Image (cartoon, rainbow, N blue to C red; front, top):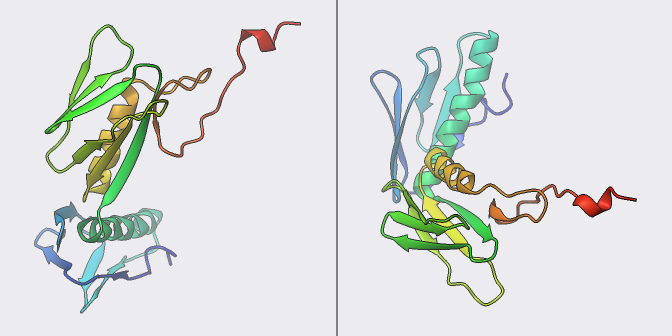
Length: 186
């Protein structure tokens, strides 16, 4: 039995889960509503304040989907009750970000500014830059998959380089740094 799949998903106050026709799980909570199509072989049962996921056989395909769908349902429940936050730091001289509604304006050392439109489910804020500090972009959403995708696309606009560490990185991320040219010469 899957260690993750056999655990029930506890429902906090104000969160409801419904399994529709076609095995679509709908989770509603104070922060929004999410849906996930579950494979027809996997059975999702909703009790009073918990959701359980079960599989019909021990085939490798069923075992892998068992834990996957349980984790996806847990992420949806956490998202609609608490939400998710990702912070990204812009490291580099003159690197800036501005938030204008759902459009982000980046100044990342290119000859032009980059305008990036984010989905309406994601809210963005940019902290004011203090002298000597790097700008920080904060993304908030109830959808973990969507906020992760948006953060990855933003990071790809200027990925951190290994020599000086300039670029867009996640707050708290440890970068692998390389020595420059002078380290190899003797």
